[in-house]
Image (cartoon, rainbow, N blue to C red; front, side, top):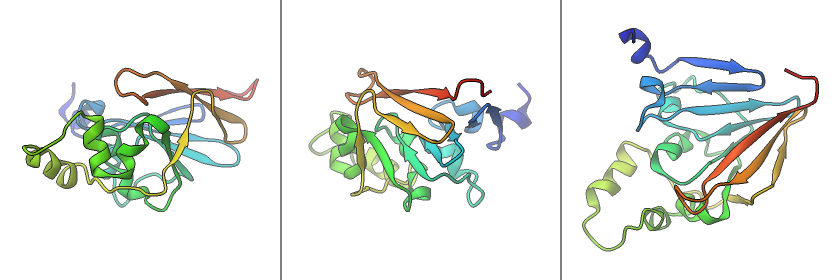
Amino acid sequence: MNAAVKDTPLVERQLGPIEIFYGLDHGKYPQGNSFIVRGEQRSILIDPSLGLVARKPHQPMADTVLYSHSHEDHLAGAHLYADKPCHIHRQDASGLQSLAGLLDIFGLSGDGHEAFIESLHSKYHYQPRADVQCFENGDIFDLGGVSIEVIHTPGHTAGHCCFLFRPRRGQY
């Protein structure tokens, strides 16, 4: 792979209503990739990653933020969208609401995690959100001309979800 492409955080791709924003090395951990789905009435950002932090102050804008799950690489750019409504599956909501909740999702308790906690703040810019809104399996976000359906896929975390994009018939 060309070194210039590998090290460029601005690589993006358009697939119909979906814009893909790659992190460094095409999103390989810990960078992550982010997605924006743009409808006729509003737009939704999915998983604000370090790739969006690298774009600051030129990160893409959206009306709402969805999270597939509560892990540091999917939350790293959340601070850039602190004024936007955010949604996550109810079983992972505690990871956005508090540091203790995020540590619990990882199965961590007690002392001895200071280095990890420090990286959550310094590298992943963790900031809790008291205003988290929860979604469930089958919920649909209608953006106007395209919708996003929540598919609960527990395993990676208890609240892990995938998203199914459905453009209006005949579009794209």
